[in-house]
Length: 275
Image 1 (tube, rainbow, N blue to C red):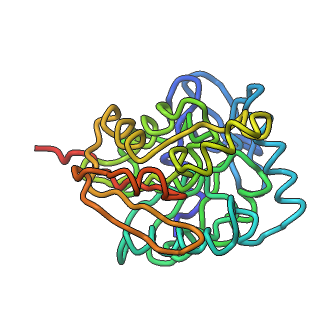
Image 2: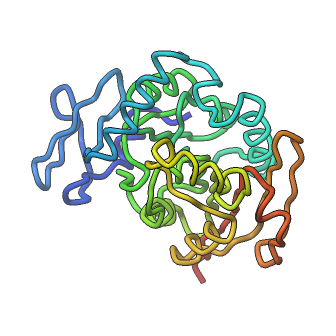
């Protein structure tokens, strides 16, 4: 578990990237004088724009309606959330003694199993969701996935489960995840499959509903990882409602059926180790 004091040592100012220290009721950057409030031990380190406010409102309503529940994290159904979570945690393996970041941590139900044996931090755009995550052993920060307030090379493992589709341009999300990874660290990145035949049709039919969602595929996630300096080690395809999962090496051919029928895709990528 990551203690609050330990969390502060790896946080960095959004303005000048300088280290922070406690200052009164919040955190202060000695270098530029910028301050950040802390609410119930959750540093508030987020800068809003119109799109950010849309998503903050969405997750605020979701937290109010569904509370501290697994269902609050679900895009399709509770069953699909559990299938993705269980298989991505299986991909992570028996992690112990690692520094881990859960990007878009929601209520913390996804990464909670990693909390006891590791130093686990979580960021979420929603203060309400962050508060729920803080009860499960995550050192929570209210922040954007596209602007992570952490020092470079902080984490051994970054998990970004079904958060990238909240951004029309996912490049900053993956670039930030790569930046905060240590050399040799891993990123596990998943998204609703925009190449899925049913999803592609829904995007065209219900344009207003999906106006704020980015569209990503397995190949697209691999490209983003490559641009961020990461190497794809494996790709996972989740088929819902069947509940089946297929995994291939990162350099293997994706194939038409996987590309068009998988409901969710995930890429495991590694940051090159120092020579």
